[in-house]
Image 1 (cartoon, rainbow, N blue to C red):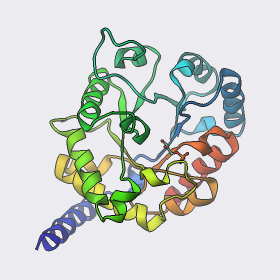
Image 2 (image 1 turned 60 degrees about the vertical axis):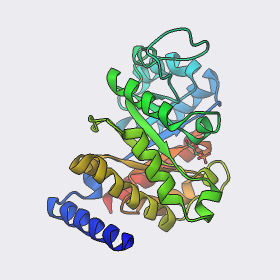
Image 3 (image 1 turned 180 degrees about the horizontal axis):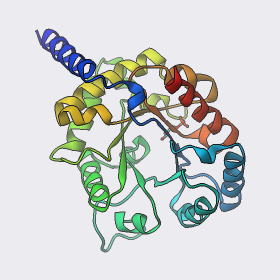
Image 4 (image 1 turned 90 degrees about the horizontal axis):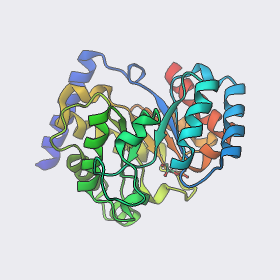
Length: 278
Ligand code: 13P
């Protein structure tokens, strides 16, 4: 019975989307580099030089999220080298300000010209970040005009027990409860078992979850969901990005390891453009 209801809802959503003619290539496509705790200023300079020399500065679909310590110099470098590559942080604190040693607030990121911030990455969730904290961080980001990149994803145990959609839907519902400005949201589906393992989700596995996410988003925010990019992350490499980017509900990537090598990252960005053209 539940399955039947789900299938009817899915059909209605698909009909609405079709009638409205909202196709993948009308949604924003983007590739975000999550450098995690990697890179030095020297390496970042070389990376950016290579990326921009290869013509990357004509795109507006690339965002780099360096460690906090590189945000200031990266902002300066980007001002010189590229008018279009966006700058993002990997985290922010739930509070506006206060006695939180070692933490960074949304306002501090805004001051460094960040436009994006990753929220709820599984590596942070593993370090104690709860759904409630993710929700607060999204609010802080939106209040100040940052685009939150909201990460969701299941562990291998949850997948094997058949709970993937439940886990991801729960994370989304908790994250977005009471939020009513959806225009800045970016969702990233990152199965925990695919991160840094070299074992990406297959295109069909990823598409299935992305489709479920889009359905949940449509229930949360109605037609606003249609414009929301859903990125895939987890062992994205130049050789699997093309086939993943051809999937209907994959609007780009959140890239870890392969974003540290300009040439690889560039190839990933290139496959996305092909996906758009096709
Ligand atoms: P990898 O691309 O190294 O698997 O990392 C993915 C990720 O965690 C991006 O946020």
